[in-house]
Image (cartoon, rainbow, N blue to C red; front, side, top):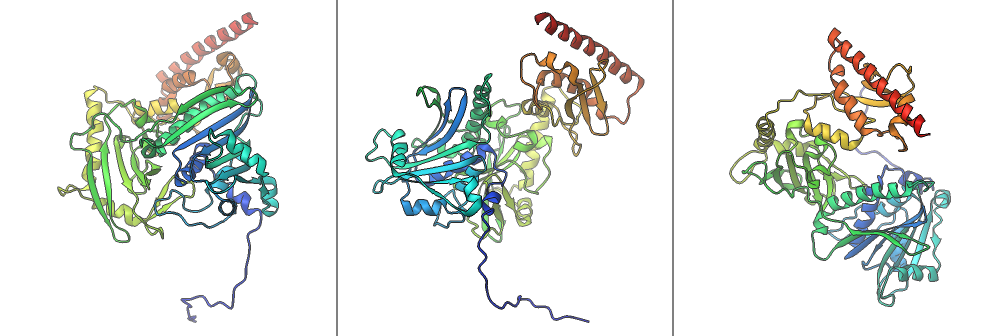
Amino acid sequence: MVDDWHFDVPTTGTKSLPPDPRYVEALSSQGYGFEVAVADLVDNSIDAGAKDVVIHFLREGDRLVSLLVIDDGKGMSEETLDVAMTVGGRRDYAPDALGMFGTGLKSASLSHASSVTVVSKTRRTRAVGRRWVMERAVAGFDCDIVALDYAQSLIDRYSSRPIIWQGTVIRWDGVKDFPQHGGGGQTDRYLHRTINKLGLHLGLHLHRFLARDDFNITIAVEDVRSGTEYMNFGVQPLDPFAYPVSGDPDYPRRFVIDVPSVGSVELDAHVWPPKSTLDEYKAVGSVMDRQGLYFYRHDRLVQAGGWNNFRQPEQHLALARVAVDLPDDPEGKIFRLTVKKDGVEASPEFASALENGHDSEGRLFPEYMAAADYAYREARKRSGTTRKPVIAPGKGFDPILRESIEDELPLIPFEDPIQIRWQKLDNSLFFDIDRENQTIILNAHYRAAILGARRGGLDDAPTLKALMYLLLHGVFEKEYSGSREKDNLQLWQSVLVAGARAELDRVGDDD
């Protein structure tokens, strides 16, 4: 029997189905990283015309209490602020705005804080504020109205001209990432690590704005009781294409691809010089992560690296970077930006068009890929090294260590990375090897002696782990160990156990 197929689904009416309050919980569970969330707030400041943005960590002694993002943009009236704080609130975006979906402020903030307060003032309106508390937001969309005197006091705190100043202050309280106990230098270590990562992220993704004379981002730390400012520095632009000399004298070159749904798209293809130690090169993930396409939307970097299904990343393309300014594609036919603005989904039509991309001389885009590959291989030859490919290090190795290994050694593709972890073993062993799970196991009995007074963690003891990787990675690259390799393993085991026991004896003597 053949049924009649309805090309249009028949309906009999409509029914309003408002969202459940738990939608807020889903909105705040989109996997925003800390740096990505803060960058989303800075995007709003840029859209508001801000010239100066301050990211302010507030501490009380050893305890971090709040994070604030302050800007001198045009500010919001009470009505505009209500729309901005409404879950799913709609507003009109300027053609060159960085915002798109109207969810960034709420989802980015409530991903990392138990409450978010927004206070704003325009030149013509008084200071007003609203606050979302996660506990009440999920119960019924109840948004607090901030007392007018507090709203003005918060504006005054960050203004040297309280009568005419305009702008917005966003305050996060109950920040989930903040150390629960600040003693023992935890807060200082957290701030050092977090601010460094935040500065690199903002410097990279907003480098075109930061390169302008009229835009600045400052990161500062202040003690709320004493008023002491522990840190205050400006974020520097980190241009992923700012190399001193090209890795290939024929590049950069501009290629054009024809994508029927959006028209012509221009690609600026670059070849980085080999062995670069510049932050502009190394700030983007691993060797595999940092190669590929760098998409910009309205001068904001929204994807740093990756080939978007055009091809697989590989070691020999480590020097290839391509800048792409996204064309207008409001319906997302070819390019769809993630809500977090940390990636672009490109349709297969784009990957196909890349194959036929060409420059003004008729050179094809795949020829650029070959040139980048050649520049990398020639640099290896000139250095006199033809290093054997290895399995990449993975979980348990410090990211800086992983990056260094991936920079120095070609990687065996499609292999699960080698992991390393601490585990209780017989005290006659310093390490064990789990071939099936690609894991190096270190004896937890010796961990405290090796770390000394340092705090343990997933990526601890990077020097020891680097040495263990160099000793043992070859074991995982063979199906079995021969007699010579077994003898070496026994030798290393004996020497390392002796050294670890000597460390324990030293700890005992110090006590």
